[in-house]
Length: 116
Image (cartoon, rainbow, N blue to C red):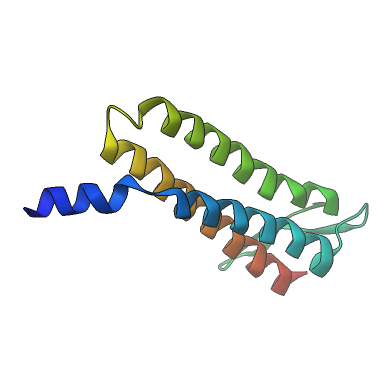
């Protein structure tokens, strides 16, 4: 077996990445709901290390973070289902990108909890 076929066999079954991405999205939503408790009161929505808090707004706007993550997850999963039989690498790449996006969004929410 050559190296390329080993990589193809590894990425053929990427369902664990989809499950992990969905789990990270749910954790992000629940973390917002229980830790920050966004409501109508103004919260920091965007924080920059150099400047500090850039945007304040209603806390319910923080729910856009997991909503955008879910939208990206759905689009990538649709692309995955469409190309999984023709392009194994691109299908696996869509799952990997979804995982990294969810991880980045979760880390953004974790940093926002330190500010709020």
